[in-house]
Length: 251
Image (tube, rainbow, N blue to C red):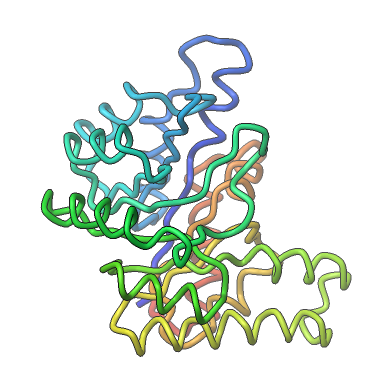
């Protein structure tokens, strides 16, 4: 059954615009859970530009939904994860100048370091995930280092969908979707769970949700944007309905 993981980083971005205490990411997590989210994702960046350490601590202590902690593969971040014990920790590339994570982690170029980080997470009882491009070499490397989950980067698909005027049948769109499909099949064949995410929204989500074997889609900006107009609980419920319709999962 496909699940929706809601990224609430941009709730914290709005808070940081005024450097105040609201809106509270913990409240956002509760609302998303009530809307049907199967999990909450937050990215604790090294520069703490939106989510901060206290947010993660409070999310772990005060909410009753699966927590996925996105983070760079640094000693500091792995130590934080091992102390707080989210259900899943996803290793991602991180650049100080980027607006959001762009491109997948180059697992094959850093196997030794990443294998050690993932082993530490596993020893702490945390499911380790990597955010990677739809590249067979990266999938093979992810399996070698012991990752249990691969989240396939869907940005190229989403951008092709937008550039084609939201035409799901456009050859360029179908080519990018086929790359994600093939990557998902390779991930599952290697014994890992197949998740996907990045730049997904209410218009492009259904072709992704219909792919065989996809376990979770992680979506943030589109949901938080819709929530400005209809509330977070309703925005999450709407996205989940679209996903379930496409995947054939029960409502």
